[in-house]
Length: 267
Image (cartoon, rainbow, N blue to C red; front, side, top):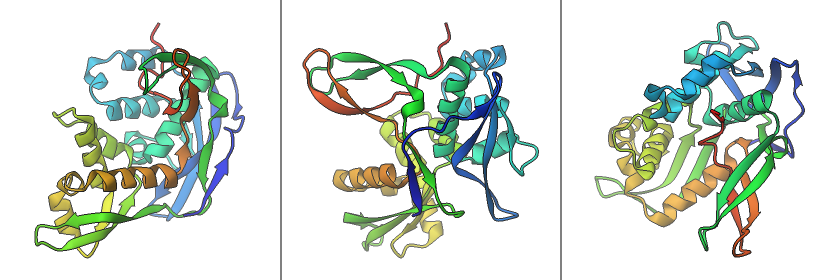
């Protein structure tokens, strides 16, 4: 796929108000066929604090991220203007990376995170250094696709078994659509997100794949669904938010992901 591992976030070039960073993936310009990766952020202000408190945005995380980044991204190499449409087209990997960089620029590198033990359900608080998270960067100038071979397979409506899947990387637009469902079940929202990124299912026609949508993901075995999640986690460029945690209550060691739900303090 052409990924390289950067062990820590590079110290960005910045003033007290803005910073320039390199996106893990980059914005793909369809007209030129080029990836643009250098982006400039400014600190969050009272305008963004108001967005975080906006009830109309709190119900859709994708739209909230789009609104924050649309305000705080002030430049993207080779692209003018950097409007909401551009921010929606960024990959989820780049958007999460920009959220972390925006948090670092505005509040500094230290953040208290909480992790829940899967054994005793005890909560362990950890003072995280946000500059220490690993980043997987794209080495080539081509947007990656994720190829997955299912073990159990998918039986299409005609009774044929399909085993080969191909996914594109999700974007902000995909996030907004998935989060905008009336059904807030996280598993179903994720199926909607992945279905929007599904490009191939064996020998099925693309229009048939689009018509079936998230039903394809829902009909897969739990083993294949976990296989898909594992492949996407391993092959997608961007932040690695996983951490090794030792429970303060029972001493159990476990691996957990940094929760970005309450990433920006409102008080």
